[in-house]
Length: 349
Image 1 (tube, rainbow, N blue to C red):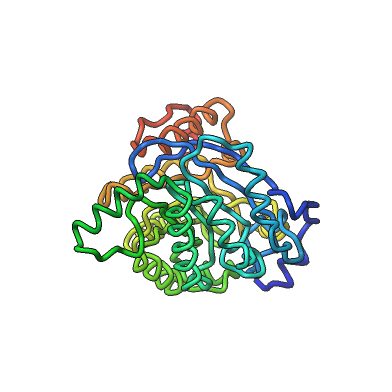
Image 2 (image 1 turned 90 degrees about the vertical axis):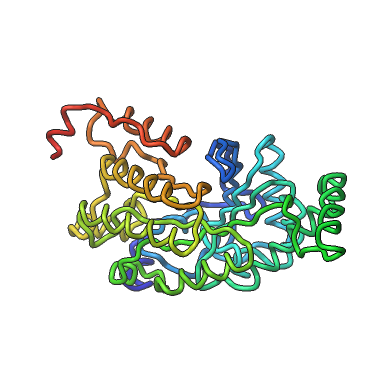
């Protein structure tokens, strides 16, 4: 698959305002503390990602040009004014936070000042764009927190550190904000990854994850369930292998994305028989096995299944809603619940 093929199959983009996020919401998520807490997600409007991934439909919500300096902070202000109470924030930009053509580096300090009071700041980025820019932004978050955050708490922490280390202060305070970078691995199946036109290898992901963990930055991974070229059973098995790999290289969160049509090229592949979306039962099996994998290591590890438009993956109107509700509960509890009983499950086998 090449860029020209993917571009030729696209429907039109949405019309967007560079001074407003194209969406924002607050929803619960199980956090590293083990608690279910509110997470604000701001879907930033910015220039399109330069990587033309086969399965991606996020380009629909992007611009063809770089946003003006100051636009991204203005978008964050707009969303935060309507999203009170969250402890964690995702700044998702349909691409790469550390792409200078998407998020102007001139705005990084202003962005850090606006979000440094959150306990966790999550951004998304391509593994090949993961470098010292991440560390610089991490430090901006910390310095902004120390400057405008909870001063009495910071002062107490500083005194404690001085007492323990005899005057040597660390570069970051443990009670400051945590930066988490979400990387798209998609799959560890090398041939399928190549077909996704993502322009990276598993080794690129591993290097990026090691770099982030080496600089005390948390790693979230995106994994596809049944990308093009895999049948249902192979889609499940390669998804589980990919989950295991991301945990092995230090990811603390894995988000499984059931592969969808709807971006043009995926619809053509569905018509030709090269792609079929996974079933709700495959989503259930992957989440169950993913939770089992996460239990085998660090207690902060979590696996989520993306339930956006989950109804499209159901083939039974009777049990579909119950299966989706079960997956929602398991996302939050990270506990495996008894399965949903329905005659259609026997028919599917």
